[in-house]
Image (cartoon, rainbow, N blue to C red; front, top):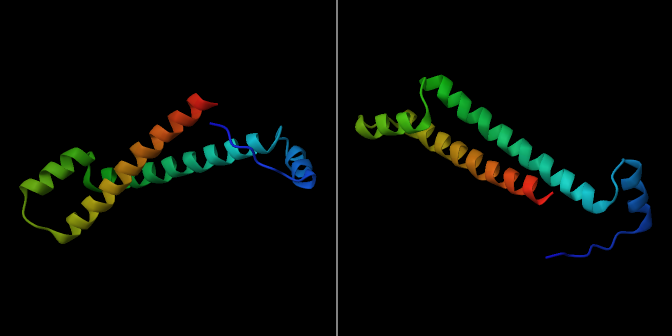
Length: 101
């Protein structure tokens, strides 16, 4: 599926001055950069929790489920889970973009 974008000549000229072949390449580059940034941010958060607890998410999750209720650990578990899921999701999107280019 292809969508046509109408771009005025002034914008097109600026895009070319930035060493892009055109607006389509600029959009692809911008999207790829944003996805890489998200993967990096989620990865840093996952690494933070792995360092804090000295284990990977799955091990921590099992340990939490088997232990007594701890609200601080629960909050960390939820934040860690979100980061882990985000890392996986955006990692897949990054692979999709690499295959599409």
